[in-house]
Image (cartoon, rainbow, N blue to C red; front, top):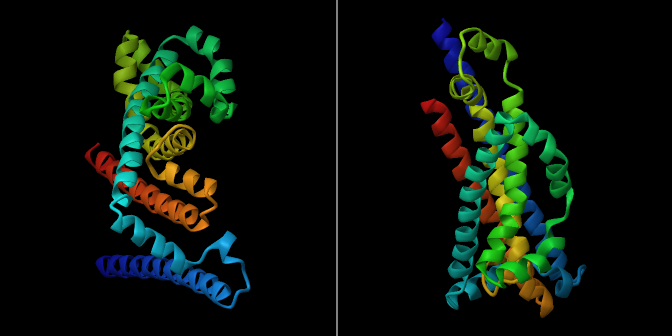
Length: 263
């Protein structure tokens, strides 16, 4: 009987998931149809709002010119590098701040200020220091992702059950042993969850950097389209960016599930 109830429960969950996906796809199709109809009947100005047909034609044109995948690859490459460095560096700094509370008290206001500062304001300084190249783009992305990672992971560290820490201290455990056997295992889910935040923050930083200095990448396509008043290219770039962002998020979610399962 229990097995039968469980099967019914699983079936109900599957049906609900299918309904959600079907509704999401239907809603998207309806929005595209309405958008295209408004354009066909000239109820909207396609020069400033484009249309699904024109966006598709623009993407096909980029594909035929062999530019599409190159721009996508550049943005993905920059994002992956920023994501990897940001995750490792941010976690390492969070460990240092947990290890030395004095350091945390010293740097806490600076982390808050840097986190609240619009990073694009630092763009001119970064370009002067690092040059108008990929280095500036990665630094821009790191300024966003590292700070967020530090704050997220550190908050996970200090949320660890104090009773567990006190128990290890009663057995004369060293600080490294406490970190290894209590802090990191307790914060494992937080660290893994920070990956999802970090991938989006890295992508945001990369696009901001491409707006400023790049001659290639999805951000460059969007900026170039706005400069020449080609709204078809701008919207096509935004849609490509949304698809790339979603696919990268799915990859991180898949990695998260694998790591949690193995743990």
